Amino acid sequence: MELELRHLHSVCAIADAGSVTKAAAVLGVTQPALTAQLQRVERELGGQIFARDRHGVTPTPLGQFLLTRARGILLAVQELRYGAARHLPGERPAVCLGGIVGAVSVGLADRLSDLLPESDVRLHTEYSPQVLWELMLTGRLDAAALVDYPGFTLHVPAEIVVQEIATEPLFVAMSDQHRLAGEDEVSLADLATESWAITPADGAGWPDYFYTACQQAGFFPHVKYSVSDAVPVREIVATRRAVSPCQAVFPSGDGVVVKPLQGDPLSMRHLLACRRDSHLAAIFGPIARLAEEAYWAYASRRPDYQAWLRSHGLVTA
Image 1 (cartoon, one colour):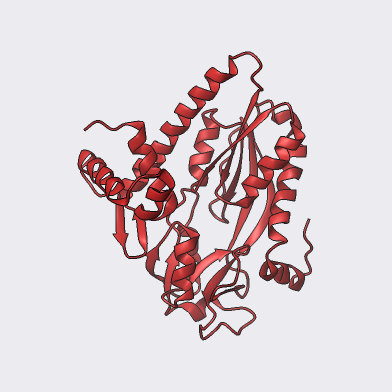
Image 2 (tube, one colour):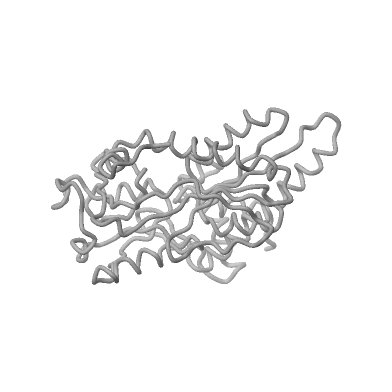
């Protein structure tokens, strides 16, 4: 069997959905048909693409390798189609924006569309900031909203301009029945004996950054679940199977509470990056301000984060 674009699209859909069943619904095919297609791809590549359990699927190292390249190939094909369309009469100039998965990127794309009404603003999201960075370096994206972590900051080449949008603390999500659920904040060391659910490597320093912080707190975390999607993470946490590091904007509710960590040992930077040879470089300052607006508009809907900001004497932008 030769790999085709539809196979790559199916593999990416499974990874994004977190399960074959959910991906089948998105793709409009039956679950057995999608499972059979996945098995054919695995036979062609000679290994397992996803580890499967009752909570869904997570990419294996082979799967991560395939997904990174599959997304690049699918984006290149998309660019080919868009590039051809730009040569048609009346086609608006395209602006290619990248961002990590989340409402911030969507908010920025909406604001950029308002700023550039004559342009066709297109948003490409990825789980991995490193993938977005590479797509921008190779000219496939004009700009990208990214993240990095202390000790794992991006090396910025001369052809890229970067501005910090916000620094966000990382909290911990736990069941509302957890022994520490009533505390205002939690020490990372107090969670040394817990089972953890974490998101997989993003190519930008996660989860190595988290492991380093745990070691500094005197323990190495017992990671029982590696899950890329927030929905199964929430279920795992709510049912008391594990706790999970999370962004400050991760919402409480449905059996989950989000707690700040004492001393703020974990944080992440939100960044906006742009190619200097992009037509967006001339208006990078206004675009960066739009990115800040998008971030704080999203953060303003998270009471736990707002309470933390007030406790630290900070105000939203």
